[in-house]
Image 1 (tube, protein in one colour):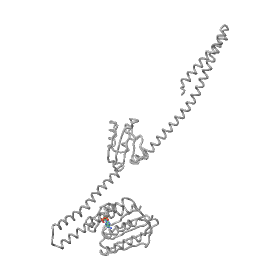
Image 2: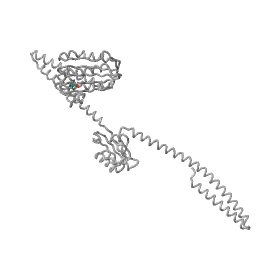
Image 3: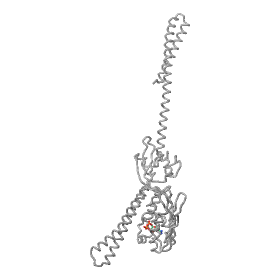
Image 4: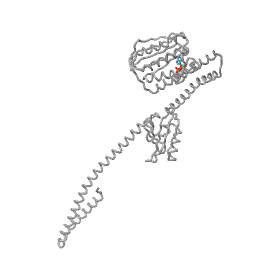
Amino acid sequence: MVRPVAWMAWNRVAVALLIVAVVAGLTGLIAPSARSGAMVASLVFGIGGMGTWLRAQSLMGELERDSAALETRVEQLQGEVRRHRDALDDLAEGLEIGIFLVDQNLRVLYANSLACDLFQTVDPRGQTLLSVVFSNEVMEMLQKVVSDASPVSAEMTLRQPEERIVRLHAWQDSSNKDRYFLSIHDISDLRRLERVRRDFVANVSHELRTPMTTIRAMAETLEEGTEDEEFQRRYLGRIIKEVDRLTRITDDLLTLSIADSGNITKTDCNAAELVRSIVQQLMSKAEAKGLHLSYQGPDKLPMRANETQLSQIALNLVDNAINYTSEGSVVVRLEDGESEINLVVEDTGIGIGSEHLSRVFERFYRVDKGRSRASGGTGLGLSIVRHLVEGHGGRVSVQSELNKGSTFAVVLPKD
Ligand code: ADP
């Protein structure tokens, strides 16, 4: 590669030689006595000057070619830098964690879109981090990173703009020591699921332990031996009842876990036939309680659904309606919509207080534990209904008034 200094040196030498040649030429003209020597000198310096000038010109050409190549390379490098920056921007925008870049005064230099969403802000650049995250804990954490220059991680609960549990990590930018990164991972759902799972396991253990304790106590009594046949029959009857209860709980747990797995196989079926057959199946139970159970709806309602699960949905709702109604009626309505079907189960039973309404679909939630147990309930029926309905892409809702009755409504897509 030609260096401009070389070109300038050749150029200067050429000019100097040409000046000397001209001066020698002029001297030859002015002083006739030295003419021949001056002419020779002028010729020699002139030729040398021209040669040097030609060399300088060729260097100039090389220099221009080199600078054009250099410009192209610079443009290529700038393009690469732009592409790298765009890729980094895309990466930061696509991350499922919020990222802030702040200066040593903890002013925001950059925030990716998830960080903006988390704190419901549009463009926090230039603002202090405190005015964005509203948390002294976060600020203290970052101040520690600024003073110690070593990374810090923490899990904390942020209260603004809404309560959420987050995992934070803050570290110094290795390429610019005056800048610091803060990543925020919202783990509220994870923690909530962990709590639900913990509660669920605790609830299952509790639900299983109660009948097992009863069975053990009764079996021990029978083991001690008694001649009283009536006593034996009563105790064995109780044991069978408790075993049935255990079976119902494990069956319901199995149904729930299948519903949870989300694998639903739909086939063409006649929803009207399935619902009517459930009504038929529960007719004697309703009649035994003196209740009027009826079906209102078409004879045929073709749709795509999982037959077993659709029957289970209807069974749980109608069974509940009968269990929680002491007098009056239970009406099961099936309505055919354009793209959806509606299944409505209406009773004139005890109703549900408004403070319980939002919770009855939770696992093991029961308004009145004693009453639920007495009717053979496991506390899982409605959560199974919700899982199965949602698994079908539908929704379930309830309206109820204490001592007046309840209406459960299921909407399912036909396809
Ligand atoms: P359970 O096995 O106890 O019936 P579910 O999950 O089916 O459990 O229902 C949860 C709770 O919701 C019941 O314990 C009961 O308190 C209330 N519930 C459900 N259906 C009705 C209804 N039709 N009328 C009044 N209360 C109801």
